[in-house]
Amino acid sequence: MIYLKLFRESYLFALQSIFSNKVRTILTLLGITIGIFAVISVFTVFDSLEKQIKSSINELGQGVLFIQKWPWAMGGGDYPWWKYVNRPQASPEELYAILDRSQTVANAAFMTGINRTVEKGSVAINSTVLVGTTYEYDRVATFEIERGRYFTMNEFQVNANVGLIGYKLKETLFGDFEAVGKTIKAGGRKILVIGVLKEEGDDAFGESHDWRLVAPVGFIKQLADLKNVNASIMVKSKPNISVDQMRAEVRGIMRSERSLRPGAEDNFAINETSLLTQGFDALFGVVSMVGWIVGGFSLLVGGFGIANIMFVSVRERTSQIGIQKSLGAKNYFILLQFLFEAIFLSIIGGIVGLLIVFAGTLIVNSMDIGLTLILSSGNIFLAVMVSAFIGLVAGLVPSYKASKLDPVEAIRTV
Image (cartoon, rainbow, N blue to C red; front, side, top):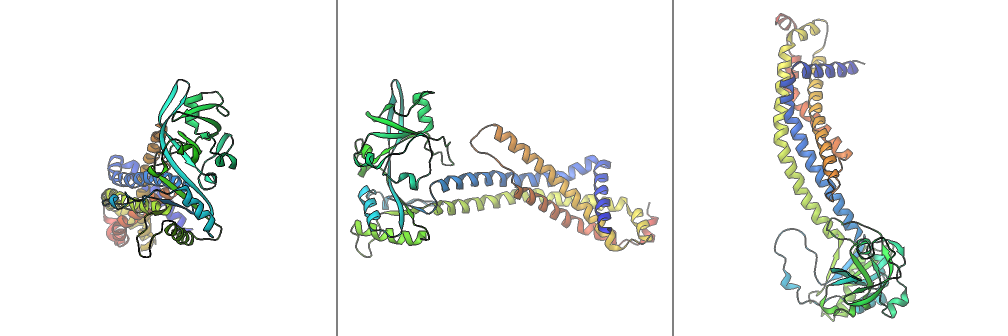
């Protein structure tokens, strides 16, 4: 019960300190407010960005490996492109070899992309990405069909000129009219639209299916030599098979298909989404450190400000402390009373900083910049805990000084 009384009195003293010395208190708490704002705003922006980026990476496929000419690169340093430029592109024949020989791969698909003009009547869209795939593309890639259907096996076998178009591509070419069953031109060749993909919106890398046309790889062969365009083989593991097991087996099959001698360096890359995730984790770790450094200076100033308020408060209430002690108040009661007051003051400054961050997220989200900012409960908890810790540290010395005052001398103080 005594602790509840301590909390109540300390809270009331903190409010009294604010209202009786408004300008002094506001200026003092400004350091805590700015510090919390700096740290939490940085964390909010980068937590939201990290969430969006990782969501985009996960859409590439969890447990999916990408066999490509170029390895993915994250981090600093020069990219040694000269080591990879003469490597051959992945091919559909290598995909079929993996499907025939692998014991760990559940699904696999070949994918390549070229830029061509897509037309419907007088409407033409230049540099549209045409994605050429094999049949199991829908089992390793992430997308949804809003209207229409997916390809049939027969359409791949006969290299039918059929395709799926992205939502934005459909809107531009057809407007409000139905697109399924209509014919468009891609790269000067007619292609029948059999489905429209659900709108995705751009991911963190500015990529989506919204502006793409997906067609059997046989259609892309009519427009380009597959040996001269970037291509990937995507492989997904069977249940209870680790990605490392699948990577080892697929690497052996690829080396065999390309007739590489023992000890010879691989002339292909096996990429994984975890490489991107690890790279971004390192980047965000550095950014978090910068956020703490920037906000730390303001928090330090705020801590000194809280300590100053508490020294003044002790001096102003010295006679009151003497009366409390003469009536039997213990040293720990006086210490905790002032310590809680310092913590409450600091938390109030932190809450103001959080309110500013929250207002900032509302303003940014209303601007539709492609990034949704979310002030997470974790960051709110962090702000309150950091504020409380600053108040605890800043209030220790003044509170200890107050608890050690001699009651007789304190009562005499005017």
